[in-house]
Each structure stands twice: as structure tokens, then as C-alpha cells.
Length: 284
Image (cartoon, rainbow, N blue to C red; front, side, top):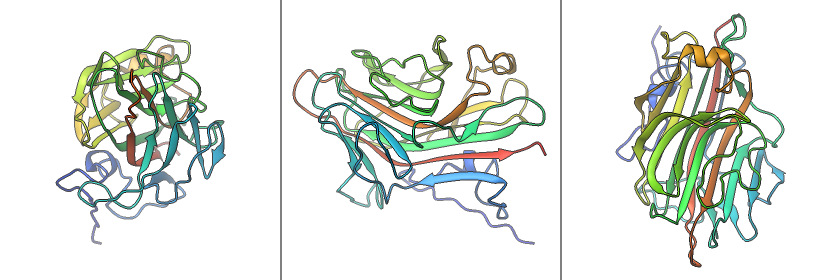
């Protein structure tokens, strides 16, 4: 029997990263039973204009007064096409716009190291910011607890993450081009997986993602990727098993959080081209 291989990679890194989605059996190879491999990809071609703290078409957002989260009206085919979400009109100090998958009450994946309940969990998104200058816009993207989209999900003046369940990436007001890989548990202390794991370039898309695989080697079960390249991990098996600092056994969903730190009246839009999340059960 032949094997079909799929890849959407190109010169501008437009597609899903094979190191995440092919390597762990979500796309490519022989087609998987969709009832046994959970996979959600959204290109936002049907994304609505969002109303803050309202469940719409499977999305939930928080927006400060005047901030908009809506389909981006311009497609140029050079680096984006089809559907793109734009967080805009963030033209005041600490203006915030955030979106998550779901209605703000339930997650779609869970990292559980317990035998009989183990699953691969994967996520990725392609995003860009208009500017990476200090006092402009910052973001966080990754797996987060439901209802993280709320007032000050990113702290005023710093863009530090609030104490919520989270695994992924963030930038801070003091160094907005520096992407840090981090994790946190509700009521815990944010921990770094890797400081300065990547560099954000203004008006240029970057892909951020990760995979948790309970079948991987010791202390390599969580792997994070930037533009499809593995950046390493400092999350040990012991940290995951303890679940006191890492969000083990917590329901998680996709979240993209932004905050503008402009001191003037200029908006600094943020864009997300697509996002994906998947889970593959390994225990029967």
C-alpha cells in the first residue's frame, strides 16, 4: 500500500510544520480515523466580527472598548491569503484584544501522564505583529485554560501573563522582539522553558507550536517549535508528573492574547493567519 505525504511548506513558511503534524501522525501518511485522532484547523475564512465576552461561531474574545477582532480585509497572496484575523484599533495605552477557541467554558485537550489516559497533544499558529518597538504591542500564544480571555489576561504595562494555566510563547513590553517559551499553572509562578527562544520581526509571520508526547524519551516529552524548528525543552518528566508548576491534568484550549503599550494614538494591529490543535490517543 502506498503512503501519501502532505506538506504545505513554502518560502514564507505558510503551512503547518511537518515536524509537528506529520511526525506525530496528524497529517500525511495513511489517512487516520477522524474519530480516533482529534484535529482542528482553522483558516478563519468564516470568522465573524467579534463582540467582547460573547461566544460566536466557536470563538470567544475579550476586547477593550474600541478594540476590534474581525476578518482582515486585505489579502495580497505574498504571505497571507484566504482567511486572516486582525486585532486592531488598539490605539490607547494597555488596549487589549484576546481570542480563544471555544465558548470560554471548556477545553479540548488535556496533558495526562497517567497510564490508560495518555495522549499526544499538539498545537501551532502563524502570527505577525505590525511592530516590535518598545511600548507598542505584545502577545502570548499557546495552550491555555478556558476563559483566559478576560480583562488583563496580560498585565498592564508589562504584558506578563496572569496566573492561569498556560503552555506556549510570550513577548514582554521591555523586550517585544524577544519570544520566550514559558509555562504556568493557575495560582503558580511562571516558568521559562527557554529564554529568548526566537526573534519576532516586524510585519513578518512566525509559526509557534509544540507537541507533548508521553511516548518520547525521558525529559523530552514536551517539545516546542519556532518556524518548524525544535527549540528544546527544560520540562522534565518529574515536573509534568507533579503537576504543581505545570498544567498537568488541566483542560486546555488555543488562545492568542495581545496588549498594546502605545503612549500615543497609533494602533498596532496583530494578525493570526491560522491555528491548529490536535490530540492522538495512545492508550486503549
